[in-house]
Amino acid sequence: MTGKEILHKMKEKVLGPSDPDSGKGKSKMSHHITHGFHLVKGKSHHPMEDYVVAQFKHIDDHELGLFAIFDGHLSHEIPEYLQSNLFKNIVEEPDFWTEPKKAVERAYRVTDANILEKAVDLGKGGSTAVTAILIDCQKLVVANVGDSRAIICKNGVAKQLSVDHEPSTEREDIENRGGFVSNFPGNVPRVDGQLAVARAFGDKSLKKHLSSEPYVIMDLIDDTTEFVVLASDGLWKVMTNQEVVDCIIHIKDARAAAKRLTEEAVDRKSSDDISCIVVRFR
Image (cartoon, rainbow, N blue to C red):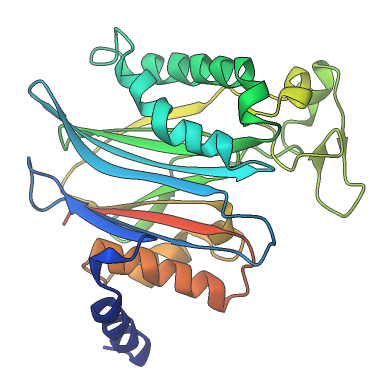
């Protein structure tokens, strides 16, 4: 065990489960499946804008693992609203159990419409999202808008399950909707010179030029599946997918793994809010 890992275990014992920015849990259907999360406030002067969901929930004869990261921009009200409502809207879709991919796509659209209707209460700004639903420990449905990301590790190899929705790669669609992509001010491509992601919930003032259509993918959990990681861009700005896998592949405790990733991101000078969820299957 390395010095960093020993120090990490000592911190775990001190912090304990009462730390509000950390948590863990496990499936009742399969005790081999566990989850853990950890959040770290960035160096910006505004309040923390990352929100997470990490829980197992029983509905009828099914178990759902519900995992999500919502990374707000100019808003903590909208990611907080998503935390309370997005999964509720997904599961209430009438064809969720038979066609979960279509149900997720529709629920994302409905939720965004609700946010825009409540703009007076929720304020300006918006939020990216990455969600993962584990159905009966066998099927994984991942969706995202924006640059929060999900990866899966199978046999030690990282595979990205989401798409980073960047203005530079979606320039044509943005321009077809009447918008533009500009690197001014600064050197980051932004929709209408304002937003550094091409898809998001909310952002009413940019909505004509901004998409909220999610990328959705399904994957099967098999004997090669080791873990899934969801994280906000505060992690991915400083670590590659494979570096994330290599950093935690030998850490068995999911909460300790999530915390280790946030620590590594801070060590690599990430100044953004960092939120991370790890779901372990072995």
